[in-house]
Image (cartoon, rainbow over all chains, first blue to last red; front, side, top):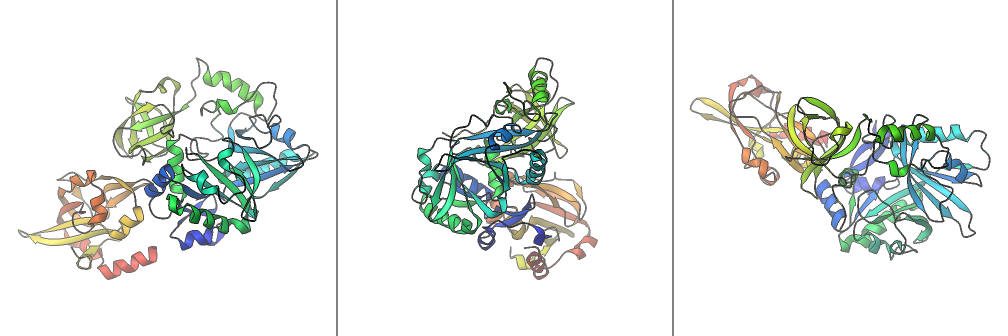
Length: 375
Length: 131
């Protein structure tokens, strides 16, 4: 089985440095090197360096690219300025979430724009097929999946930008959050963005696959003095959970619409038509109106240390009101937290609930998200 | 305790058996290999004193940041003591695996299960295969 898993350009490094490799969406990825808590806290206090090459990297060139993406994404693409990055969703015709993505508008020296779409690893094949289907008969769009010819590295934490400064031609600290640019890392072409998925400030780099291990090692070497360490997917999950960032396959799915997920901000309906826009216009009323009955995403704080995990039932009295979608012990807050979906009459912070954790009822209460916000 | 003098279950529990007033008492813990594999322990759920347990059946739970795992009873009998203070001091589990990190003491009712336990060398071999 192992031989069928895809390897990122940093695979050999992970294997040589104690990375516990697991199957993640068809990729052999490090879940941790030593301790998830150590890697988590290093990211909160110094910097964590993450191999996120499993994420799908799709590029769109051509005069029709912006218009094409505008017909697929829940957020406007046509008005994006050079270097701008937006969090967006892709929805099906009935308004279910197909994926959550970042879209980048990058211009070359001559001012010619192209677009990058960073999609979830587990959705890449589905999204690529979906895009190819939609591209039929569309002129002036060149679409390429560059996931396997590039590497992607996230450097996250309070020391992240200082660590990258001597290594990258452009200073991420001088870039606004959610912007990116083409730059150089040593002699390698690189796409630098001030983005991340940990609740910390930081940056992400896309570099050619052949440069991946060199870039990776150079960042770790440069960051060593500041306390930066390699960090695996285990703490990426606990970090994003503390920041209450949804994860596809857990908080997001084709059965959930953006309004239920609390992602209404990522849906721009005004004067737009895109896949799912008609359904979303209707769902916006249905899901947020006074008569709505559909589940909504909430944050939960547990009374004990025991963590509620995905699929645990949430109850008020004897009545089942929803389910947990992600849960873990939070290393920063030193208590157990979770996200889940409950019926709308139970979403008020302070609501006391019980969670069925493997047959044992555990007390919890609804709290505001995010659980953690950087100081 | 020296792990070389202990018995081990396939499911990574260690067992120390001693005679006490004609009964056989098993002290049970979790092996260093298992604790190292779990990492980041946050919670342990131990059975109540008096509970009847069966070899190979769940005894309690141990939770790490990543996941929950069952603890299995390596012997059949009755729980006569549980190391409940451990819940507030999980570091003891990794610091003194074969001593202060014990989980429960079980008065063995049926010795048949003991034959399925491994000695240290055999268990080490299993760990190497799993690593």
